[in-house]
Length: 263
Image (cartoon, rainbow, N blue to C red; front, top):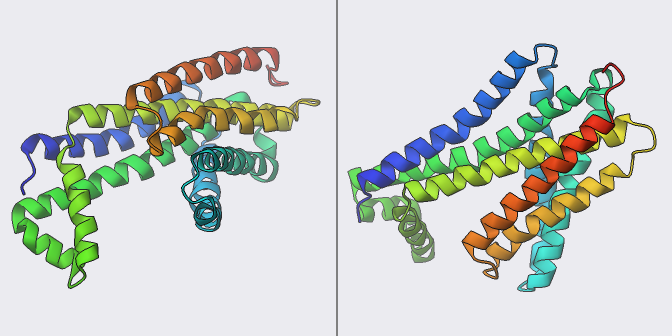
């Protein structure tokens, strides 16, 4: 097995874009809105790290074996867990770390940090790790890589081989779809950051917090169905795009109707 030049270049470009696009979005927004509080970006990133990568994963370790092969259980649990942990993380962050910086623009910065860090970790890191594996296979040979990976355990080598076969099919189309998915996710994170900010900062609008949790879960339904093999790739992306467009419209209307006190 050898990896094509297209695959290697695509993985490299995909990894770079997954890091460069969020970074560029944050820089451009900050330059255009100099009054924004830059630490909000790092608070958003930290929120994702603690609530999604640590706390949510701990619950997954307990719940996923219980759910087993149930498609309905997986979809209901998976989508609600994502909504509850990520939106609760934002709620806690606003209450504890951003009380003196309550503005819609700062909530957007927080969302960019949350969604941007997710893209860097989930896609950027993954692409570069795949790239490293592809380069190793081309330079050392598949047998040597499998020996280093699995040692004397054939089951580990089998898993590694399956992963390498999957990577070998990567091309520019796959990278484009991955970046598109991350752009959608970043947009959603920015919107829900605004929702939770309004829930925290505007009197009588606390209901926006559970609304954000439920809306987050609904948006994630398509991804959960795709992971279980129930939904095809194209319908999933259409669902995501339409759902995100609706959330953006709602968010824009909300931001105009519930402005900051300083506006």
